Amino acid sequence: MTEQPIDLLAIAAHPDDAELLCGGTLLRAAAQGYRTAILDLTAGETGTYGDADTRSAEAREAARILGLAGRFNAGLPDAALENTPATRAIVAGFIRAPSSSTAPPPATRTTARPASSATTPASSPASAVRPSRASPTGRPR
Image (tube, rainbow, N blue to C red; front, side, top):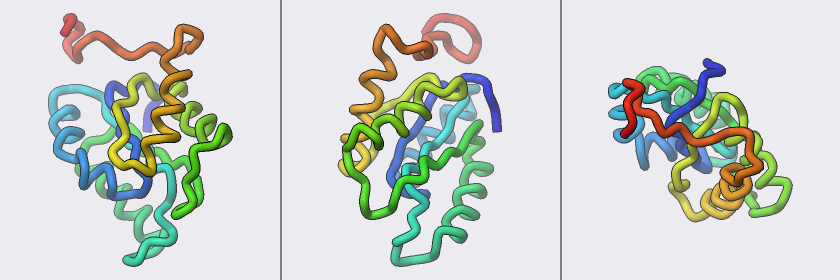
């Protein structure tokens, strides 16, 4: 999708979680010129409805509809998310990537621990990536 910085990154456990919990915010932000993206921690492979392939196709279509600049998947095991150093390192890697500059609070409790733990070191002074403070027009907010 892109290597330019992302202004708003939604982090969710499964494909469709971010759309259901903050899709309107992502759509509005994209319409206002912000670069938005979603990081799904899992492929949702153990879900009751559909399989990983179906969810992947739905995620691609949702990304198109929402005007996302990026849609990423961390590849963590569905129904087995744990707040471990390894999980935090994976999530932090996506946050620190050149295509990601801002990580708002995660939407679900299962996602919250590894995502919030990963954002702390990612936003520390030692991090090479800084949250964008400029508006899409280049003027300070």
